Length: 511
Image 1 (cartoon, rainbow, N blue to C red):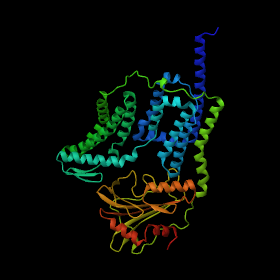
Image 2: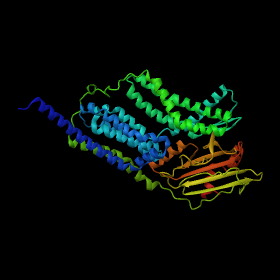
Image 3: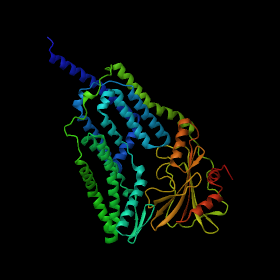
């Protein structure tokens, strides 16, 4: 005689069997995706391990695992299935990866890989289970290294906040870009002082705390706003404090104080402050379930192995399609290094060995060819020219990327401010210890179009990679020393016939 207990046991065994099949299939699909995009997975892992800005990403995966484990009882009451809606997410991720690979934007590629993995969960476990896993799935976005794009903005905000506080405390100061001059010295709000490392980690922590401690959506939003505003203000106060202490106790004492304060106490103090501000408004009990399975309707049919296999094949085909497309266009669009690639002769200017006030050179990592020289005119004015050629851009050797051009990375040179842009170019001022200033005009030529915008250069690179065409790229930098050296650069550019003519002369297309 079959008892009710036996029926329930059989139902549980059946559910466990269904879960087992779907989880094994999901694990296999995730493994294949990881192998297909192993370079991007390795790049993300390398950033997590080697960049202090993203060291917190190393604990994101354990946190996601813990969040899923906390939902195990509720998830056990759901039945996995398959859904075509997940393929939309996979397709979106594949498109994002394709655009990122074509434009040379690592952020888009990494985001695309994460989206494809998220879409795989939705596709192979179904909408109901995906709803139960909504927050852990969304929290996986913090695996993508992002946020350093805000460094210049945060540097400016920190510098402006410091100036406001210096004014309140009566310490005379002058600001130029991210440089502040006071009676005690010359201070730079450097990239490391922007506060971006702490802000990114704080947003990740705040998002987790908002989900665990609040039920109300408006309280969650308010808490996240605090997690952004308080660190930014606190970083401005920290920068002000360093400058103020340097004025009263000396720069060496201020540097040591700032290192200890920021390295050991600052992070903890701000976290405690933020949590204290939100503590009174916590409205979720520690033992509240993550979600109520009864709120998730069961309307998806139980999938069979054949259906599960079809959906797995479809998601893998969607993920692989971009790599096939780009491979087909890569060889056809590769350029050849010009047989002639030499420094141009500019009327009224001669090659010069005049010394620099502070060593500088344009940087073009991975360029197939590069020519660079100093020129002087009859009035003794000097200007530096560098032109680099890429037959075909690839990972690690992209024209429009950080550190390429006239602002060399990991040197004593620091960005001061953007200046008025010339036609089809980008102009900015940098400085080195002394201080020594430089005016820099920078251009990028991709697919025959010249621009000073990294964004436009990447879009043009993406266009030729996706649709075919000449994939060669050329970088041009013209620079001169001096705070007011812009007229020297403009004169040289005019005498050279414009940036396109300069390039043509270098490549032998013009006399």
